[in-house]
Length: 389
Ligand code: HEC
Ligand code: HEC
Image (cartoon, rainbow, N blue to C red; front, side, top):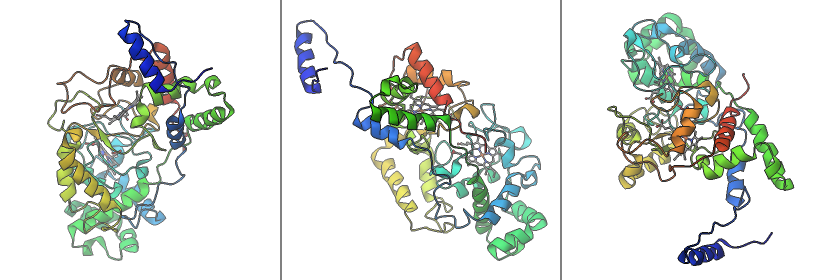
């Protein structure tokens, strides 16, 4: 087969175009070098999440054991009936409704994401209003629509049930911990230690990618059963522009045009300024590494807010696609019930402008996927669910 440079083709098609004829270059074999590197980034995640220097209890088994009990404890809520588990239970560690119910029947504003593999993320909540797993835990504890708790209630409950475990870890009884913020930070850190054990990886997808890479090396990529799904994911669908790396997320914020006309529709643009000033963030006094690499990440977000504000408008965190069959419904609104609906949304290039804040990211465009490509993409997404622990 003869090879032509893209430039030759552009010249040729410009010439033919000017004669009123059209000409499409033959498709480049998949994967090209860039695509190959991208596919290599999709490998199986490390068995344990990367260390979090801002939480020195993060990998302490005693902290994780206490965290598990607190995660399931409804009496930490003001109404006595809501725990973390209430909204992060079952196989998917989420709920199967668009939003969830907290104290007194109040509803959350957004869809609860899974807490499986949460230890691998760097931003939390759809709009990134927490920058570490441990500080995230304070938000539902104190939120009036979730557990509606308070430092006083937390201290009372810890004193009644967990006093010795708390002292063994932090050297003081909860009743002696007079700094409310420190008490809250300790709560968050033991919860995070538990959540860091909730990992579910090793999916059929990982084996398929490994086999596909071998086929590429052997020159038989096109014959591999994962060929069309991966090609659609990486090339025509551009999914891997954002869903990449071992967690199938770039851990960044993008506007993909999900319908949302609620008060919080501005996403990270709305949430980031307060988070950057939050005393519990990873550069604040409750972090165990306030001057560490974590603070660089916050600085970058601060810069983006002033230099690329329009890209953050209506932008949400790229969720992991691991275990995605277990976490329906989808998107921050929980509006899409099935993965077919998700594929259709991308296929049309997001909702029409005016249905959401800001403008869609440059990668979000109508895709014109064929029925075959949609099916292959669906099967690929379905293969991303890991084996039960
Ligand atoms: C009433 C339901 C409810 C309760 C109770 C609840 N959550 Fe959530 N959780 C949610 C919702 C909704 C979100 C998404 C909120 C948002 O992004 O605005 C969420 C987000 C999260 C996230 C972020 C995941 C990610 O990928 O960004 C983590 C981690 C989490 N919750 C852990 C907890 C912990 C720990 C507790 C207990 C201290 C808890 N949740 C209690 C509903 C709940
Ligand atoms: C520009 C970055 C970007 C691209 C390209 C992209 N996504 Fe996403 N994806 C996101 C973001 C951000 C969200 C969450 C959006 C929201 O809720 O507003 C998301 C959400 C999802 C969800 C829902 C997950 C959940 O737990 O709710 C699925 C499934 C998904 N994407 C699959 C795909 C597929 C398949 C493609 C390619 C056709 C793709 N994405 C292309 C950034 C992207």
